[in-house]
Image: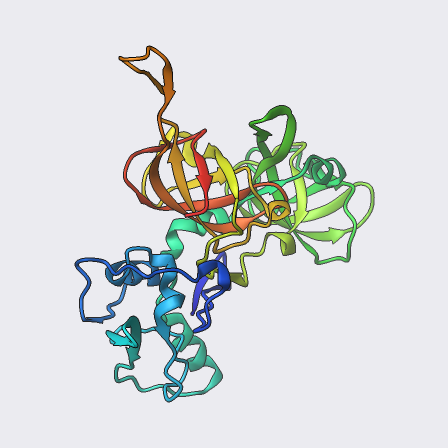
Length: 349
């Protein structure tokens, strides 16, 4: 499943790979949504996750029931006007695509438009900010990164596109593009607060290298907020949101972690808000992994024995990981039955 959308002037792909053969970790009983339709006509604004939820109790199990129609061009792409039909084969539910009528010209430019019209896995607007401006950097990466020294006009707070700045530690060819980042909060290991998992960095501007040296001269090409001396420069190539493959699936058995931060300065989050997990590539987490959120229920006193009894954790929601770093990852809360907060545990759904 491929959807193209635009971020900061770049055409970016948000991709869901759907295959008929399920992975062993996903082979499990499929429960249908009790209110599922027999047929559903896709409309503009739909996402694959929402359509999956119409048919399945667990939307991330869509690849288990999707049947690619070989007689249909691009059977994994779903467009407004297409019909999703529920059938049974050997007693098991399957979902089949009936292609709506569309006239498609195969010239390169129109082909891009066709991809642009395919429905995305999730609403791109929900993760646009995190794909475009926010990321996580290690302490070592920040210590080695070039940094802003000052402005040519001795102005930084009021810098505008077209103005030039000086920076130290810049290497690379002229015309190389950089993001200018503000260092934010530290992400700490809940088990050891001396262990820094990474730093949040937010892109405040973009710039292009005009002349190397120490200091080097760069020209500002875009700005989101004021630039300050000490802001770090990171190559934009590392910040690209292209080729995001979202194949909803469970991570390996036994995966456990916790929510260590939420975005936008709030203490609790609801559906379609972002969180930060203390799980990353080093723990085997990949974009598309689905995790369930569990909240500790605490202890209660047994009125008969008087002992303190640990209550079972309560499931509070479902997360979809959409971006990973070495030791942390970004995830979107897709479903919630109660407010989710920092400290809640995450595990296999």
